[in-house]
Length: 177
Image (cartoon, rainbow, N blue to C red; front, side, top):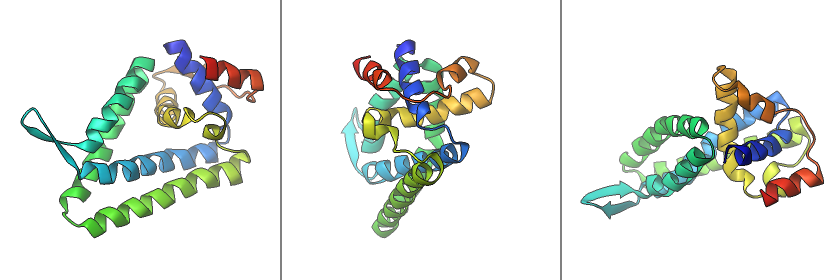
């Protein structure tokens, strides 16, 4: 699984070489996550005598998948999601649908604007998910991996995020992997 993750990470990294584009992703990806989870968090599902937020229930498979691909990156992502879920819960508990939906709209527009600005202005190429839709799930892992590498905790991932142009054979290898 680690090799599969490294292949996907390398493919994603090739579309994110400019540090300013990466910065737009460090901000935009969490914004988009919060926007996506916000309306789902308001829905409660009864499970085992508890009312669990739908946002958490739907995020669990992704967190499990990320952890299976790479334990360290998956654990870092789980840790990074905690304050985002706390923020979402604060908004939901305000009891104001207007606040919930205005936060959703603002974060959604701002998050995507940052993503596309990063690619159009700084990277000058289309996003990775245009060539491979599965890259939308790699984006959060990329942010966590970059953080782990920057902290010196995962130097092994630095090589996977090397500066190489994606090739057609590289795209096919990721798609078949």
